[in-house]
Length: 634
Ligand code: AMP
Image 1 (cartoon, protein in one colour):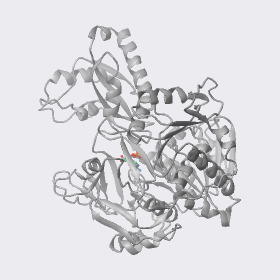
Image 2: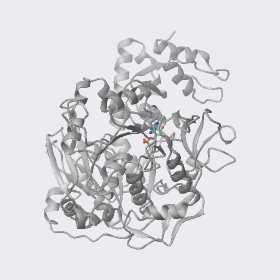
Image 3: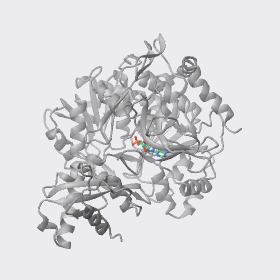
């Protein structure tokens, strides 16, 4: 049977958990070996490699100096500013030491938080690794987020230092960061002591705040020969916080440990990605997302690979740019997202045959559902295995995947294959937490303890961690992914979408509540419902239905258009353009149940041209009629 070897590997990871993970732990360096593989005395909190001491920066950088100091560690390519730079492991080590010394000089110490709000520039990688080196906890915030999102993350993480830049570049246009950052700091209750700024020369108007803002280049010049010893950390010490959206307005700070994460990534590089030391990995994500943390920075470097860090879009200067990078850099492992492939699918297919892709072994895709036709298209175009795999910010590495490093199993289009080793995954019936049969849709759940590398808690809020993830079923304490899934007769899984109201735009998770709050910040919005609607390119797009406070302002088509534009600008300003609804329709009432609950699912169904479902509890049926009319539906 296909997959037999892999299934045995998976079974062993659960049945002989300690010996399995002890073996995987050999893939990284330990300053002190662990006393116990797992401490699960306080369910559902799991502590991996208890008593062990290690350091992510040592594993990603220092330990490679002996064998591969002159090998490129980081290749930075920017089609935005038309520049590239290569850093060998020796050079990366020097830059990380400088950055670590700079942080120390700015008062950052063990356990302090450093917020990194950066475009895709090498300094972002140096800053992350420098934090890891000195035991500071980084909180990287995606550069596309605006002041409000940033301010809420500043207040939650309370960073001592913020590392940022004058601006980013997007499709050839400068995107200033500094004004957003200044606005966010002004809004935040908790103020950072210092702001360290990389001046890229993309925003000459960027202003410095005297006494607070420090120039990266100037400070670096004072620390050129810095040698900052690695701070050895207990395995459970937090390495970073990464915020993600849920159903509430308040983003959750996913907290990751140190030792478990290092081991999980090292093991995934071997068993899943098949990335070997001396080879090259190209992950097209952004450092602001979990994929960027795990597979632009830590994973490939821990494995001793060369990591390609790319600033730009997939279609500039033309749609062949990524394949040219694969050819020129001899990329062996590539990792991207379905949306990007859907973008490429609309371009001239000749771009895919123009370059020598012989070095490429696999293309991995994740972040959102990969539709079957895109999966087929890219597989045929590349003539390489294209592996869909499924994971979340919370898990840090795949939950469902093929593991060609263990066994090359046949790919089923549209399926992220099997349960990753280490995960005791079940499909559960929503009603009573019993197990689903073959072909039956259920909630994708993980029986704890969660494997190494998966989040340890929500930053500063253990109770919220338990409540959010482990409270779905009354009878059973299991981790809910909030995704629906199904398993076919051959044991392959399929993900069928979220069980909650989270929207996934181009692989980026956005909470409906967050967007609703931003829309409501517009002075003329009394009430709003935001739903995620299927989109050909981006997977989903937010769509808003708002009730105006002053109905006169939306009485005419011109009035509605002007108000819609203003609402969109409000969302851009508060959350960033990534969260902007595709449309804002004005209605006089929103469909709700008699108990006042918004019927988001019904709105969503109408917007997608589906049956709105059971409406017996609706308070005012005309509200749904208005939605229908606004959508131009029959
Ligand atoms: P994020 O934490 O932002 O990466 O979002 C994680 C969510 O994205 C998951 O809970 C799924 O809803 C979705 N997702 C990620 N990867 C896949 C995939 N391969 N197939 C289907 N959905 C996915």
